[in-house]
Structures are given as C-alpha cells and as structure tokens.
Length: 409
Image (cartoon, rainbow, N blue to C red; front, side, top):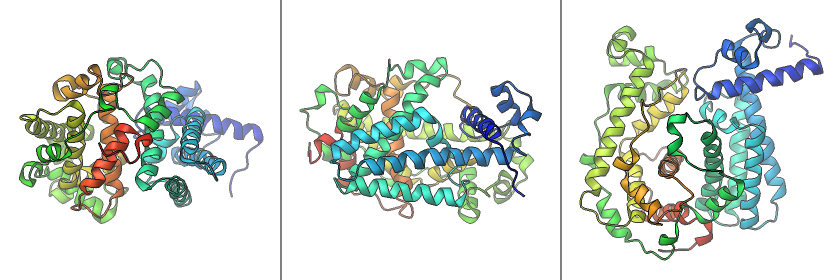
C-alpha cells in the first residue's frame, strides 16, 4: 500500500528531492549517497528515511521531478507560440529555458544523463514534447534551424550555470562576466561570429579537402575495452552493460581487468585520454599545411569531429556507457592547454573572427556537443556521412545563427 503524506511531509519531500538533485549533479549524476544528501540538508541520514524508504525511491523522485519541470516549461512554450513568427518563438524559447533553469537548474542534465533509466512514461512524454517543439519551429523554418535553436537555448543555459559552479582552477576557461538571457538570445540569432567574419568568405572546398583525412588515418583500432563495451551494450543495452560482463567479453576476470588500472574511474579516464591524444594528433596533421583563416579552421574542426565520430562510432557508444556508470570520472590534474592544441580559437577571438563575448573553451565545448548531438540523432547510419551541403548549413547556423538563413558564404 502506497504511503500517504501530509501537506507538510510532501513539502519536506520536495526539499529532499531538491537537495538530492544538487548533490547528485556534483558527481555528474554518477554517484548519489544518502549521506551526501543528509549533509546537504544538515540532517541525519535516518531523518531522510522517514520520507523515502530507500535511495532508489529518492532517485526515482529526483528523475520524476526533473522530467516534470521540463514537461511543464516545454508545454508552456508550446501554448505561447501558436501563431508566432520565428523571431518571437526564439525569444520565447530563451525566456522559457531561462525559467526552467531558474526553477530547476539541473533538470536537463539529469534527464540527459539518466535517459536510459527514466520511467517509461516520463521518457515517452519527454520524447513527444521534443518532437512537438521541433515541429513547431520547423513549421517556421526547417528541421536544421529548429534543431539548432533547441540545442543552443539548452546548451548556453547549461554553460551559464556551469560558469558559476566550475572549479576555481578552470575559471580562466570560462571568463564570462555574465551570461544573460540577452546574451543567449544573441548567440541563437547571430551565432558566435565576430565583426571580422561578417563579410568574410569561406573556401569550403579547400577546407573540406584539408580536413577530410582518409579512413586509414582517421580510423583508430579500438582499445579492446572499447570494443568489449560496444559489443556488450549492443547486446544487452546500456543499463545492463556491467563491468563484470565487459571483463567476461574480453576473456578475463574483473580483478584482472583492474590489475591494469587503479579502479574503474582510472580505467575510463586513461582510455578517454588516449582517444583525446589521437584526435589532437590528427588535427595537427590536418592543420600542418593549411593557411586558412580562424573561421575556416573552425569549420575544419567541425568536419574533422564529424568524420572522427562517424569512422570511430564505438566512441559515442562508450560515451553513452560512461554517462550511465555510477562512478565519477576524475577531472584532469590541470586545465587543458587550448592555446597549444587549438591556437586558432584564441587567435580568432583576439582578431575579431569570433565574438569577444565568448571563450576558447566555450567555443570548443559548444561545437563538440553540436556534432555529437547530431551523431546521436543519426543513429543507425554509422557509415553514412551528413552531406557536405548539410555540414555547411549546420556550420553556418552555429557560426552565424538564424538571422543569416540562406547565407551562402
């Protein structure tokens, strides 16, 4: 029989859920303990069990709360945009996204990280809402523009909140005095282009030739752990792909697997670093004899990311699996050296190719997520690249925003 709660008890449950969400996001929604939630609230752990019988019940309540917040604000946006034009829809989208993040700053990250574990009804409702919102925007523009607006409004709001909670040693990578609603709307409408880029042309063919390496250069023979993860995930799904099953697929025991690493976090962190280094080396080779502008190099980076994820599809499968693990991935010991690995980002900002209201880190993070986002939604077409025309259009949206629709720079 379901436990009945008084109004006062329901209010306290809401407070515990809110504290649980804040606590959980500190670990990127990987590890949640009742001790941590109790500490956040300044109460004893037994006090929590008066309102939740188990940690699993609290997790379900957090998932439901996050999904409910998104459904509420998304439905509100649909109600407000019935006959609006694209500009009005964009303004309202930014406003409703800001309201969502004000009410529940971590709701979107929660359902994204937990998407394989949400209750079926919540998952179905969220997918239906997303399609309705995309259809509404596409009616005024097209699918690419609709997708771009939904993605950008969400990601820049996540970035705004990340700016305020990032570790001190990473603050120099962010360096926004204030990412406001107006700033986010400006990015949606006008992208990340700076004054130098407004009248510039892009040698698309030259960039595409320089940044489309052959398959043998791009294809990295997967680490056997990556291969095992992909095989197990394809057979049993992300939720059931345990480290034990992965070790069995490799043909060793779990303890033997950990013999090579200090723990599961170390195993994942080392494997991620190996892939990052391989991509950076590939980027350096593509840039070695290329003399194009920072704008053209940014398009090249986008092309290379798309090609890399397409030819090495197991990387995104493993990325999905990592997000589902109840283990915190260690932060790098020091912030990445973006000036060394991506010098054209800093150059582009200082010379006016990119807006000076942005940072190298945020450009890189945005572009990488934009490409990954599309690769996830192109499921089932691992070897079918987005057409060149499609890639050019997506880049123009990311760089110039929606106010330059039809732009053929």
